[in-house]
Length: 177
Length: 386
Image 1 (cartoon, each protein chain N blue to C red):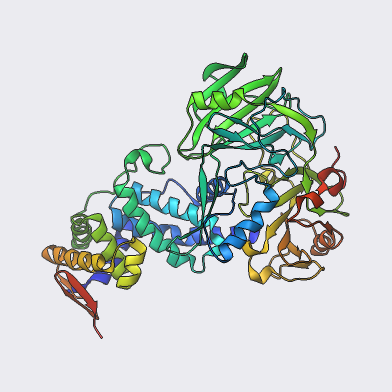
Image 2: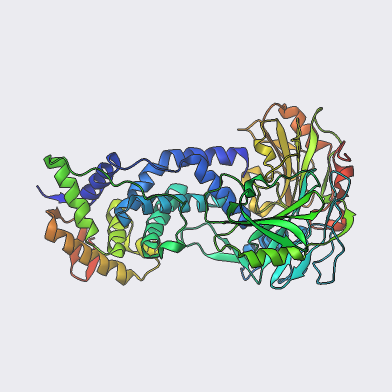
């Protein structure tokens, strides 16, 4: 990597690292695993910097996938630095806004990690079913199933309207024309 | 109030980040991890890819003179790894000569030297049939080629150049009757926080140390390190060769390393060859680990040779003349006449663009694809014979 590339890479990491960590956290629900996932993906991206056309899109997709992998991977195989676990965020201060967001996060945590990953990619990242399936290396039918079941479970806990243009029924989801 | 899922997730992420604990790692740690990862994968060879991927892999395999798909990585112009008994290693007197002969011991294949500095020479260690993959860089991460990989680095220091202070208090061992130290928690480089740790340091001759260190998370056992160390031998002093002969270099710069790839730890996985010159050469004495000359604080430049397949098309300008990067005054290029390789000159600053261009314009190029045509580095860089 020449100095041009490294400077561009550093700029990219500085700008994106925090948002990527948030994406990973929503997926895996653990700040330390989220950081591990982000650092693993960015280190990989460093080696492929010249060969990735859209590093932002690549990184977001890979971070969600890595966050899923981190959750599934036995702890002794995780690529992480030695050290104590990160401290957990402070508890709710009881205000309505804090309660709201904690409710969303808590609701997300009740979902299997694969369902969380599907919802994050589909609705936060705006990926299509096909793109989400490619990112998570699973059949499109699985994405549709996870989407429908994930939404159904969240609806049990949250007051969630259907996203614009999306029609969901249990076990199936398709884009409205 | 009813909200859609995208809003909820965006709010949840934003709010979560407000209360997120501080990250333990920053940009520097990410870059360091990327460098380590890249170094682990910089040996490439023809794999099972197709189309351009095969052409790419073939192009970079040749200069590294692999003896075959199962052969070890090997320095340019060096003999193949052998199981024949090698003689005791005598460190060459020349600043840029090496004496490590490739060898095999048990499941391990050790290359001959792939990096030479005035203070040490370095080889790759491959365990069994380890392979490294080349990915296409897309989100699908398709493997386009596989190559023999390596998982440890053997570093043989010039007598008196190394001090094993990082091994203080670790387990004492014997290697061929000589003292050594084994440390499960020592990394190849200080400051590395990756799981790739474990190292052995031992005296291969009186007052002369060598180390072998794991550079992948799989790690090595003490017994494995000892087996590798026990097999170390040497041959005749050999001068590395390079495909670029520099007739003129900016005043005051001197050669600090020559590599079959790049100078570690900034190794470039796609590089065919490199030389690094520096204004004030590191002392290469009292070393506790290998040297990153690019971060030594002295103005430096590196001449590297890449297959064009691994370079940006915007940097390719066939023809004999050197040209420079329009957006970076410290980068100049020149292509080989056949258009297959790009020579890149990358300066840390302090050298005019005109001088950088002059370095390349006045250089003589061998065929990077034919190592037999290359130049001994002592003749290829002014003042490199000492």
